[in-house]
Image 1 (cartoon, rainbow, N blue to C red):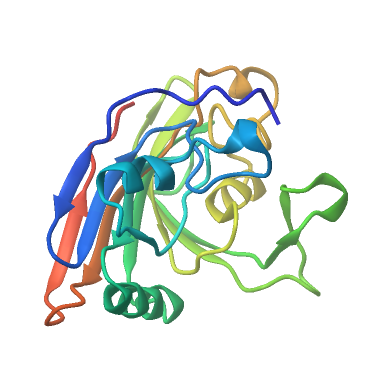
Image 2: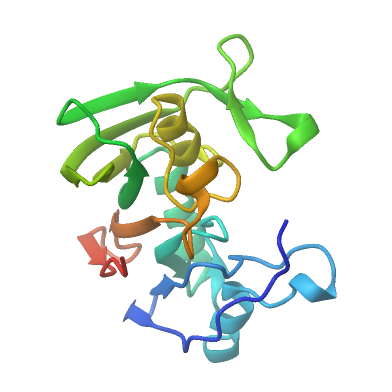
Length: 214
């Protein structure tokens, strides 16, 4: 783990009401506190400084930016938690990956498990891994890289990062899975662009977007 120097950007609120809060998480900031005082600064604590009642629903990797939802009531936390658990939410990510993909769309269906000696890294394991599925679609490619939209069907740890690596196109700037020139970027080129969910009060469909910063 590299030294933890999280960005000091002000909190960007994308939407808030009586039940839910959606914010744009910056890359390099933990979602929840890590072990030890030096890893205490995180999006959760910054959110609770402004919205003391905020409750955790899901997480994004430290190096991933983009849409993250918090519940503002216990009811909303249960409601949203079930939506994530039952895979009723829809997430779209934008990534820049190494190399140019030949096809325009595809699906990666490879089971994942934690790589214990090298955690927090994950790896493909056909015997013991848990099902992990990612749909991808090329936005544009050229100059040795491709911009893709990634639509995970499951929510495994590091899923998008390992799946892109597995098909030979690691995400640029990935400190865990990219090597050589593909690693030499100022940040992980992965951004949670949109989140679709049902509002806990009444079930209305909502779609919240955070503009991609790269």
